[in-house]
Image 1 (cartoon, rainbow, N blue to C red):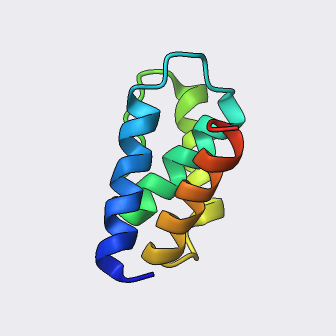
Image 2: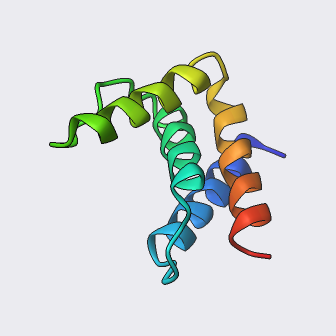
Length: 86
């Protein structure tokens, strides 16, 4: 898959998630969050006003920090396909 196609597929998966109407389980949301942040090179601290949510988000980012940008996009797409588009 070319980088252009990967980016296009990733953006389509993000749009799918952003318009998804059913509740998404918290564990899936955290993985999507981490993959999204890595794919967009955004390593800033989580910005929630709730410390517990920040802790979960920070933990998800730590778990995903060693994957490449391309692998983060691929993982995001795969997770959307497996968990939300079934």
